[in-house]
Image (cartoon, rainbow, N blue to C red; front, side):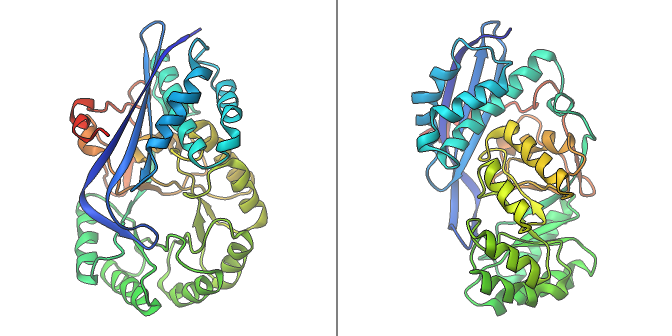
Length: 362
């Protein structure tokens, strides 16, 4: 039995090395980042984190420190499912998929890391162990880049080892999006895997128009064409637009994923381990996808998600996200010919440089 002795949270506002942009958040100069360190009575420690775009993350820390710590201290760290359920119901009334699941996610990730570290095994093996080598893609957050700059960025991704790229859509005029996708297709070649992400910019009717206009560019998927709340709209877009649909970074509970999958409104479920409820919930979402013969992809937090994807038989293209922690991590993931390999270290293998992070503390 591993009794939880302490729970520590820290909050940071991390300035990005390059200002990013998409159709929902506009300019993104930084992201907010909350870490959780859970220590047991034997001195073992697990680390988790969650994040938010531009604003909101300090609320995660408030929920963990003010409410979830009381659920955790003195409990058996190995009873992760029980602890998850107790956290869910502790903050259910104010959570249910918003800040609540992000707060739970950070704690859940730390609990899984602690368990795997105590057992001396890589997390992907503890989670089931399918194949540590995972297909990845570069997730460009680049809506405001000119076409020339977009192509230069693509060349940088290629030089870094990527063999699949996602770009943003949702410019003021659809003709601008078409021009940019056409330019990328011409530059990268007919069969190079390209994804397009609209970040919920369009109505269902606008998304159908866009999908039909993009159909000839042989896209792997069109991502978040409209708000995730519009399940009926997703069904129409997938049926009438003629392009596979990915969505999930703004779907924050297994129940919402179930509704979208059961309705037939999605091709690639795309959970984010940092906001869907952590590794416990991500695995259940992946099982829902598998039961419906769907491939699963991911959003964000690639250094954590690689362990989940390495444990899943139905994984497809893990995102290498623009909100990278590489400068704060001892051994960042390496990309080679479109592939990365889950670390063979105990736990998730992420050793954060908290001293470096200290300058970003809020």
